[in-house]
Image (tube, rainbow, N blue to C red; front, side):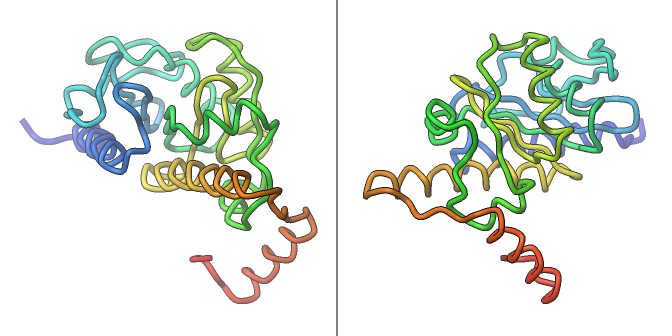
Length: 215
């Protein structure tokens, strides 16, 4: 049988899961990855360990979260679908990284410790705690993304990052964890120096003038 776009994307999702595991962004079986293909969503199955992911571990659902193909999808399918229905995101990565969990416990947003936060929308808010897999959590996360955040911390839970492609969503997940790492390291030494909103505006302007994409 010919390989379809869905087949190719299922393998891409599985490969990204293995990559995320290798970089230790996700711990054990904690997390899920999805990508939107038209009016369908390819999402990792329930109880998947990222390091062992294969194409068969990626299920297909519609934009209402109804299973179309594959095994039972992640319990956070509603969260992923909620992001897609509210924004132009094409991929979503949810992990339980140690640093993002820690920062989400004490901060209502990631403190402005580095201008790379611009790549995550400028602000990374923390949404209140809601039980995993709940409509309340899906709504809160989707609303934060709709307001312009490319990443969100989930209190007592983890983080969610989205992007215009699977590669970008993974990059945003890694950047979220990195910024949280930086903040925690600085906080252990003293009180971190923070940027202001004006500082971020100046960086954005400078990046535009210099056509600077790498930061």
